[in-house]
Image 1 (spheres, one colour):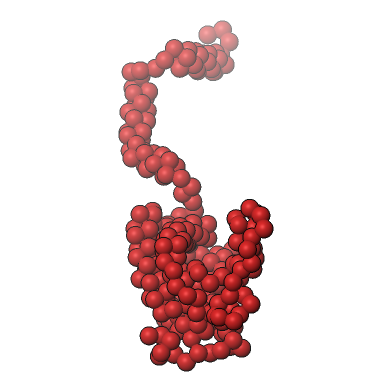
Image 2 (cartoon, rainbow, N blue to C red):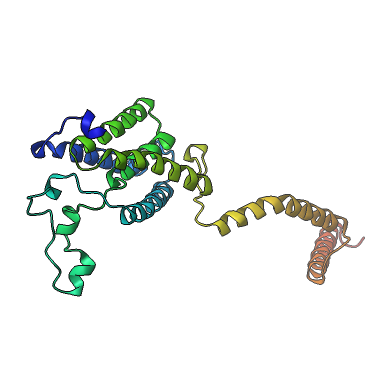
Length: 263
């Protein structure tokens, strides 16, 4: 349906979809590292990329299953009949079998279609900025770029329409379920300077906050008991006796100095 609705761009304009994808990729990369440069820090870059990589790994894992279990004729120009790149030469050794004639087999592959890897990266980046970005206009522009990228991929005949459509609903579902199971990122604008490294650290801090009132009340009780003289250990008792003895000596010396001689 996409091939019928969209005119073919041709080989000389196939760079358009790659240009849009590269601009989206570089823009997201620069934005994700902006907390190192600007004073306005809304998120931690490490935690942001941990989520992004989780989305990408889950989506690519599903993509491997789908393009290994499906087989469609490659629509790209180098996959068509008569092209020298339409078929790969037979492997000469085991290494060529494992590497699939790298890098030629990667750059000019014809079977990895369902679903589009370019759309995986594009949708993950756009959804991540939509959640953690601050500019509403840029969010709308990012979604517009994702739609344009989809149309250009089909018009360049790099993927079928089904590859793009499957990517749209699969990636969004993957992001929804993975994001639901990951802990929410802390907001840096709240003034919190602690970075939760692991679940253990988070539990330790929670336990400290829960037991803090108990520790405070216990310290107050010990302080009152110490003032009343109820519970004092032997070391404290000796120190208090020494202090009392020294204080008494000071009083006696003061009285003796104040009393006149012979009285």
